[in-house]
Image (tube, rainbow, N blue to C red; front, side, top):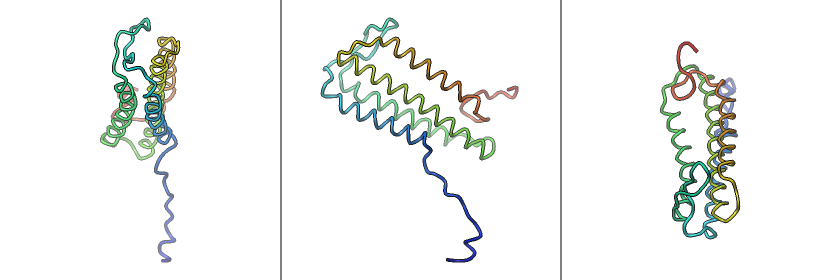
Length: 166
C-alpha cells in the first residue's frame, strides 16, 4: 500500500437510496402481479370508469396486464432522465436534498399506480370494491404526502415554486 494513498479518505457513497430501492421493488411487484393474475383475468377487463364508478370502457386483458407496469416504469425513467438532464442549480447539498425529495415523491406516485392496478384487477376478478372511494382516498393521501415534502425542495429546474419572491 502506498503511504500517499493513506492521506485521503473518501467515503463510499451508496449507489441507491432506500427510496430508490423501494421504487424498484414496487415496479417489480407490479410486474409479478400482472404475471400472476393474467391467467385468471377475463378476456375483457374494465379499463375506464366514470365519476360514479361505473365501467364505461373495456380493454383486452393483455392491455391491463402490460399497461400498469409500463406506466410505472415510464414514469420512473422519465423522472430519472429529467432530473439528470436538468441544469445544476444550487450547491451539491441542495441537489442531493432535492434528489431525496424527488425519490420520495416518486415512491408515492408509484404506490398510487400500484393501488390502481390492484383495484382494477380485484374488480376484474369479481370482488366488490367501490373504486371511486379507493381512488379518491389514494389520491388524497398522495397529495398530503407530496405536500409534506414540497417544503423541503430547494431551488431547482423541475419542481416546487421557483419565483424569486418565495
